[in-house]
Image (cartoon, rainbow, N blue to C red; front, side, top):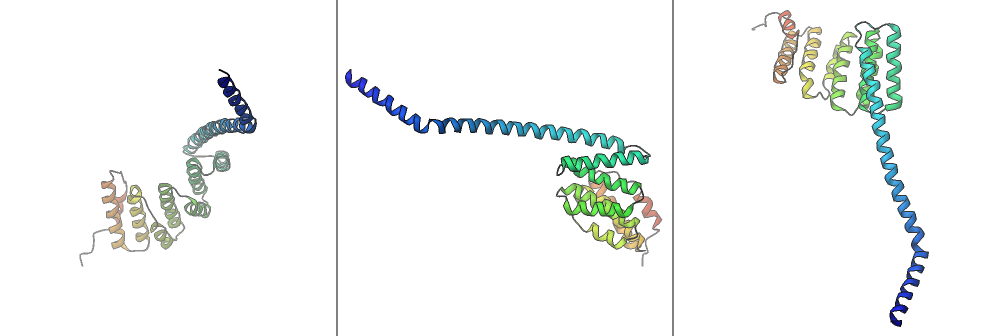
Amino acid sequence: MAELITSEDEQLETLKRWWKEYGKAIIAGIVLAGAGVFAWNAWQDYQTSQAEAASQRYQQLTMLMQQPQMSAEQREQATTMIDGLESEHGGTLYAELAELMRARLAVDADDLEGARDTLSSFIDGSEHAYLNGLARLNLARVQLALDNVEGALTTLEGDIPTALEAQAAEISGDAHAALDQPGEARQAYQDALARAEEQDQPLSGVRLKLDNLGVEDAS
């Protein structure tokens, strides 16, 4: 029995020495681990709240942009909302969508150069393939309106998602028609119709553009 007591006493003393040496470090580790979990949960909650805020702001912006005729005050309000999404939620999908709306505001205000610059910057900075392609289509349209037909064709040479190929082909047809190249324009319009049928997409006005080119020269 004495040996057992001695053994227990030795073990207790060993445990006390071990705890004195390492106990604080263990407690600190537990506290840090708990703090890490708390910080991660807080970060997740923050991200969720930020996403919800960005979504709400974007919805408000789209409702404002749906006005058939925006007043100068409404355009100013929309610009402020776009700036807010950019500054507070930059890098999110909502901020990129808002930047495309900035270009539309410029077009509505007959500021084609401003729209061109906005879309060009967007293409250089966006990594979202679909939105990048959409920006290319809009930039090509703006370039056509600025009589930069060759520039529009060059823009369309960039990466265009499959879902947007029909629209890209139609714009290409418009560019060739502006260059008085009926053969190339006809081919582009036909390609647009074929791709629209493949994607089951409505593409109004293209057949009329084909008719306006007249009968293809058989020679």
